[in-house]
Image (cartoon, rainbow, N blue to C red; front, top):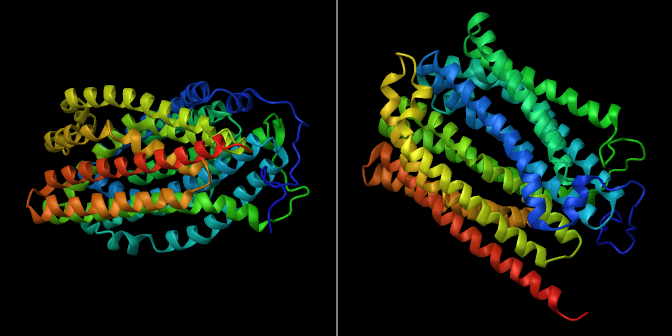
Length: 473
């Protein structure tokens, strides 16, 4: 049965009960302006998170290469929850923005509540098994001699998973209504608190690698409390979150999961790909190669922050334009976002390539990790080439997610990860015998091909929508 809250449903009625906020006005206006103004707070928010991740890794690096590797082995599992939160969040943002674009606030609120409840159910189902079986999972992931450290770190980290899912979906609701500033405030607070707690708990309290995990959980919970204050106490958001009058609706859940599940699987695919890459690295170069990969990738993600921020914002901008049936705005938003992303990425790539040696020192300042400096620098120089090609692929996927075509985005990512990256990593790393460097080359070539496929597919899809708009009524 079709959902009357859907803006495209014939019984849907515009809701003008609450005045537009600045964010909603931006979403409904010029897409270029919306991308610029809404992306900046997201960039700042994610920059804070990247700085924290960098600081966290630097503090952990002081514990030695084993601690760095242990974090590296647990990171893919932790990223599953981050991916689930971001994936479901993409679904919520898409549905909320489409309904706001269709001037249906009540439908947007209905979708937001469904998203939060779906996230809570997923967290309950997955958290307990991960906590109970952390050590066997570390063994399966190939942690070897660092299994005890990896299990100690992971078991604590998984306690915070329900809060991770809640926070990511709440962020998505705010993004869906064009309010990226609150996301910036919350993520900034979490990052600063985490960075302050890390040295205190790791070294001063003597908790070691467990201290890093405890600091992360505390900061995540603190953000949950802030978000609850905004929605339930202050109540100044465009959308209201309440169980009053809530009625479960399968069509709403399907709409959210139609984007959210494929997006979550995409993140799961990335985690799986990381596990495969870790295994190949251990095979061709030992556990130190995992420490190099993990440390280098953290630095690379720091440079990718602007692209992720633009991509996340683009889902809402595309969703609002699609909900309002302004299909030409999809072309404008997609093209502008890619041009902006490439300009930023090119600058980042040059800086990383030139200063790779100095940047690598951030992870190799202790005597126990100093020997990894040239290997991390080499990784950064090879991977920096990829940065310029990432915007075309990443931002094209946002087009499909924003219009509710999550499965298409998943198919493209499956091609990228399995048909391109995994194959090239095996080819160059193992078959051709280039070892560790071959793995880096495989990652670059696979992602470049994946980005090309995503871009061409998105352009064809948007062109069909524009032709539909141009047809006489």
